[in-house]
Image 1 (cartoon, one colour):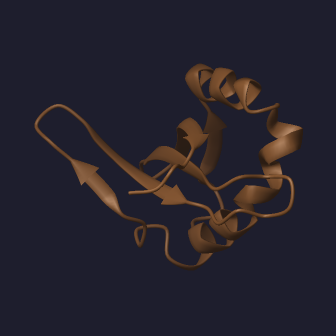
Image 2 (cartoon, rainbow, N blue to C red):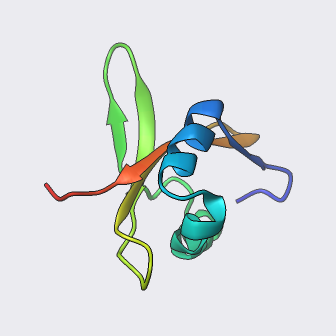
Length: 90
């Protein structure tokens, strides 16, 4: 990931995180995500249609934090975490 790429949390993500107990409660679920962004930022699954495009990551459950799906968008200079919710399976 380029050193000058910035990471933001959208207002929708802030609200979704609040419903899950706040970022302090779920922040640890992002540890592997940050590492993945450093290694291969374009290696995450991508959903694309005529109207929308986003990437996502599904985290494994860790003590105190359920499995979560994080939805994000990415450009050459920023990553925006758009939404998070508990992942209930396929």
